[in-house]
Structure formats: C-alpha cells, structure tokens
Image 1 (cartoon, chains in turn red, orange):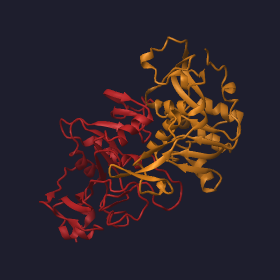
Image 2 (tube, each protein chain N blue to C red):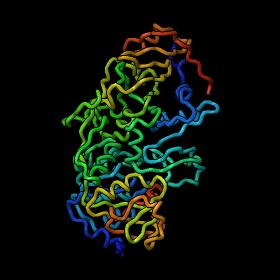
Image 3 (tube, rainbow over the protein chains, first blue to last red):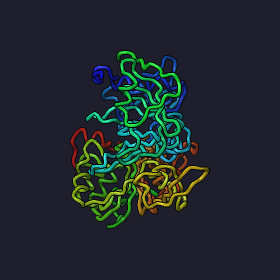
Image 4 (tube, rainbow over the protein chains, first blue to last red):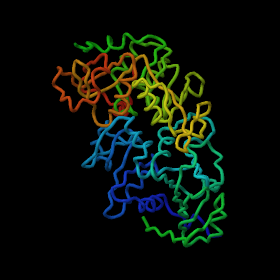
Amino acid sequence: MTQIDDIKLSNAQIAWRAAQDIDDGAYVNLGIGFPEMVARYQREGCQAIYHTENGILDFGAPPAPGEEDWDLINAGKKAVTLNPGASFFHHADSFAMVRGGHLDVAILGAYEVAETGDLANWSTGRGGVPAVGGAMDLVHGAKRVAVITDHLTKKGDPKLVSKCSLPLTGVGCVTRVYTSLAVVDIEDGHFVLHEKLPAISFDDLQALTGATLHITDTVGDLIVPEL
Amino acid sequence: MDKTLHSLADAVSVIPDGATIMIGGFGGSGAPIELIHALIDHRPRNLTVINNNAGNGHIGIAAMIEQDMVAKMVCSFPRSKDPRAFTERYLAGKIELEIVPQGTLAERIRAGGAGIPAFYTPTSFGTELAEGKPVEEFEGRSYVQERWLKADFALVKAERGDTHGNLTYNKAGRNFGPLMCMAAKNTIVQVSELTQPGAIDPETVITPGIFVNGVIEVQNPAQEEVLNLAEAVYP
C-alpha cells in the first residue's frame, strides 16, 4: 500500500477543497479551529458571508496585533473585524439563523462520521469536563452540513465508520465529508465516493474506511494545489 | 421613573445565598466584570450561575468559583484558555454542571423571559444530552422537548442605558444580554454611559426598559481578556 503520509492532503489543502464548494453570497458557519481555515481559500470572485454564533454576520479577518476589540470576537473567542454590511444580533436570533434553516453551509470537524450521517465531534467519552458549545445546534438547520477531517485518527483507525463509537453530536446530519484522501458524500445511509486522490487506489482507500464506499457515478480526481 | 443604582455594592447587596443568577457574556465579550467583582465582595454562597462558559483565569466567574460561591454552573462550554478554577472543582465533585447546547441555552432563557414553559428543538436529538427528555415527531422529524430557564437575578453589561432601563450594547458583547434581561426577576445592568430618557434613539434600543430593574454607570469597564493578559487576580 502507498505510504499514506506521503500523499495525504494537509489540513490547509482539505480546507481549500471544502472552500471550492462554497457559493458566492452563501451564509456559512465554520466550526472552531481547523474549519476556520476554510475562509482563507474561497474561490476567486466568491465572497461568502460568515456567521459566528455569538452574534455577528459578515465578520472578517483578524485585526492587527494591538487593535483587538474584545467585544468583537468569534466563537473561538478570537478577535475579528467586520466587513461592510455586517450585523450584530443576540444569541436567540443567532441560533434562529442556525436552527431555522437559514444558513447555507456549516463546516465542522469530526472524531467520527458514520455512513448514516451521524456525527461524533464533541466528546471523547473519556470523562473530564464535557463541553458542547454550539456543535449540537449547528448540525441541525444548515442546508448542508459538511465535515473536514483527516481520513484516519492519529492511531491510524478509520474516522469514516459504519456506526459511531463516541457520543453523538447529531443523528443523520452530515451530507459530505472532505478528508485527507477523498471527498465522500452521504446518501441514503451510504458513503458514496465522489473524489479520491489519484495516488491511492480504490481498494487501498476502502481498506482505510470503516464502512463500504459506494460508487454511483464517475469518481473524480481530488486535485488540490500546494499550499 | 428612575432605575439608577448608586453603587455597585448596593446593586448586588440584594442577592442572597442560594440565588440563581444569569450572568451575561460570551467568554469576556459582554462580561459584566465590575458587577461580578462587587458580588464577590458581597460573597453570597451556594449560587447557581447561568452563563455560556465557566470562567477564565482568576477574575470574573472564575474568581466566584475560586471563592466557593458557586454550587452549580449551567453552561454550554466550560472551557477557556485557563479553566482551572472550574475544572479542578468539577473533577473533585465540588461543583455541579448542567451542560446545555448553546442554542438550546439561549432559547431556554428566551422562553423563560417570554413565558413559554417548553419548546421543541432538533438539537441534541439522539444524543446523551436528550436522555430522559420527551421526544415528539413533527412533519417527519424528531424533536426534543426543552424547558424554560429563569433566574432570580441577571447581571448584564450594556453600552448605553437611560434611567428607564432602555439599553444598547457594544458589538458582539450583546450575546445573551437581551435574553437574560427578560428571564430574571431582578435584572441589574452596568452601562458604560447612563443617560436621561430621550437620549437614546428609540429606533436603536435593543433591550426595552421594561426588562430592566436597575442600572448603574461603570465608565470604561474592564475587559476579561485584558485583565487575563495582565494575569489579574480577584480579589
């Protein structure tokens, strides 16, 4: 089998691929951490409007160091700036945007995604202090819920599985997964392979995936620039 | 009508042991640091605190926890850059935690303020946070019943206020403030600028004064992040 670490996409490249599917003017929520990278790689001529659940639509880049306004932060508690046309709102309105189906896309990280679209991304189930934040809200209501993730855990186990073993964030909520090796859709309780890296064979990819990969149409090449 | 409070100590002196208190803010954004620190000086105990988080560093809510004033936290995300105050007590079994998804937390508070005892939401369906809660199907989807959340007191930070309690907020510092103002029996607000009625354009009022019981002016309020960068400790 090919050495996976030599061919797999970096986090920036996974974020780049996810960004290519965001339309101009889409209302988008990016989860804290890795998903925030997606905003850097919007297509030329596309300007999505980013929502942060603490009450801003259309926030922009971080301010210069020393220019932070700590009443102007994102969900990750990082300082942000505003784009022209931004707005503020309270938390109930913010989650009305989420749960009322007004967001076009939510992009989240994952510990595990099941072929049923179930997502586990909030708790490793190992005790400690539980913290859910807005994850369980974000998986409901956005028209498209996508996940970006490494294809495998740090230990080398599949993150795409038949059934999640960790505590669930939501049931049947994920529609597309962008991994370090492939783009996989979830349709009718199945993983459907949409794109894969040209350097990995289907059989090798299947061996690294914890549930059957179906093919319903031509599988595209997952081609991402060096970043 | 004049809802002006004349000192921070007076403002919080009515809060007794065992009270349930909503405290505004998302992390440090909108956190009413001066009201919280006045409450630490007053030192009621056995409190239930409702906030999105559970404190950061050694100031604000974290300092309340360090002073053993808090018996229970109701929050969505009890983590921060420096969550030791909460984490240590939680892992030692000294503080209770009710973890609530953030949107559900906001809506429960809004429902409390709006007189709506329960509502249904898709959030948490099929997860361990829905265990024991009634589930109903509507239009082919499953929803979890959640109950309203109310409090004895709310401590909120706003930007401008008038003596009738009408409020505007500063940027994303608004977050839970307008909801908490509605959901508490006694809402105490610190404002950066206190004005006479009429000075705030009614078109810009975010929280109408009917939801506010007392306002106190705190000019140039502290920001939690700035205090934490300076490694501040309270008291």
